[in-house]
Image (cartoon, rainbow, N blue to C red; front, side):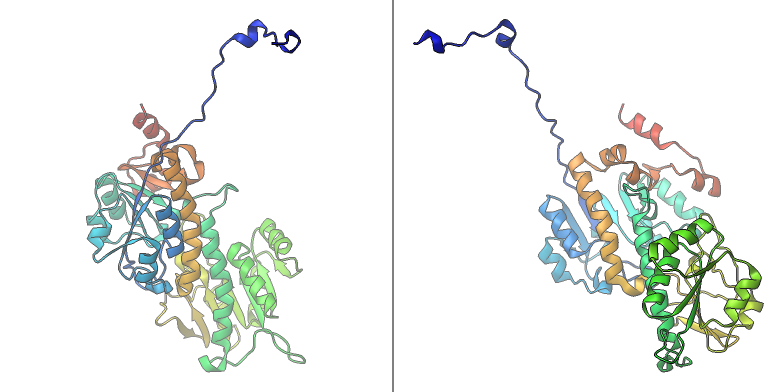
Length: 405
């Protein structure tokens, strides 16, 4: 061997070094159950066939009750082709470790729960009863409200999606009610050349108000927005990219605009409890004959004093010759779009839970998902709920620490 080609190794190079191996998390297969919604006029489904296909292909098991997706025109054949098991009874679905619904559990469904199960559904705080919470505690389940799941931008993605749908839909609904075919006064929302457009007054500059404004402007209507938050009004102006009339909720200015409005949209949201009632009965009396009110805030009591709860089967009523539309679950009217929106948020969460080694591991590592937990293994972990209903509160962090010791 040529000595000139030899390589001399120094002492540090002769020392054996450890090679760091990547940490491997154990993949956990989840068993997910999707029962058919039994709540009145609830047409949405929590997971679409496309989402089921992704979950099944990642090693998870999905059991869905027969006809659970028909409200959104998702059929059993679609789910079967995606790899789901079709259950003929809800009891079979409730054998799954994770139950996902859109509406809160019914009293009958509460009886089918078993200790250790995870329930992911809406909580519907304005209609929540203490008996419902107490039953969940008694069953020792973990309950996650998807309205309170946060994303990486610290917003509530499912609430936002449903609000976008409600905002868009409120204007489309009002436009249809104004048409002669619905016994309306026959006004085209956007008008035409030589004929002025309809005037739309929007109460609330949140997500619903923003998307109602976008849709009304897109149809050519004249839009005027009221809110007591100047920040929200400024944000709405910036987001829609068009200068529109905005004002704080001053009674005299509001009354002046309502008297000449063709459509009034109520989209005032309350962080806790009832929506603020900003339009009195006397104001409604002074509105134009044949005008339309769509009270999107009706799920929190409504922001028009004349509002009364209606249903999709009988959505409107007239008072002082003003047509009122006060259906609380507008998003269910567009069940297919709403189902995709919910599914798009929940599917990545479920996939990550499997990758992390189970839902508990995901809750430990992901603040946004953990924010949705209000009951953990039979203990109430949401301080607001515990104070509202006088039930014992336990800090979720302490429960996590105890369960991982």
